[in-house]
Length: 186
Image 1 (cartoon, rainbow, N blue to C red):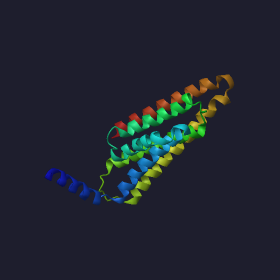
Image 2: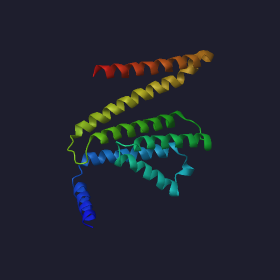
Image 3: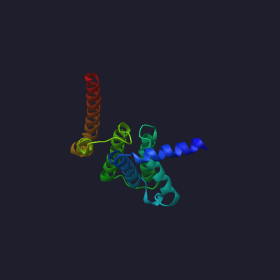
Image 4: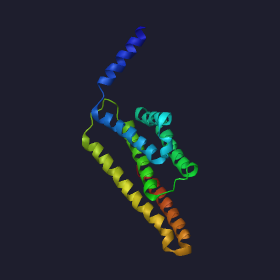
């Protein structure tokens, strides 16, 4: 019984030391994961016990950002997207596609930040601001490039799909090359 009492005391002490910024970042992880579920899943699924299960899945990466939970949450979001498109016949709209992709990226980047910060870390707010501004820049560039690539097939008539495919491959090769260069630079 002493071991249980000691464990409860340790948890209480650790809970009292939680810093506000690491806590807010983990709340952000939860909220972005939940927003991804709301955007991806059809409205018919978001009620009752299913909603409770989705809330539980959204909480998991907030508590374990270094574990498998962020990946699991992303897979559940993508699964919800596939269910809504294939199972419920929801049309694919550009705004919803970009919103789901953006929320997935925000969840991922907030999990990365949460994984770096211990619960009791003292963090300058400008660090989080710079992190979020960088994430917003990545999202903006991705959205602009995504819209341009979506509109590319309409520009070339019948050859537009080939042009879009080649442009997409060039972007993928460019990103892979940039990542390789950044890795070697370290």
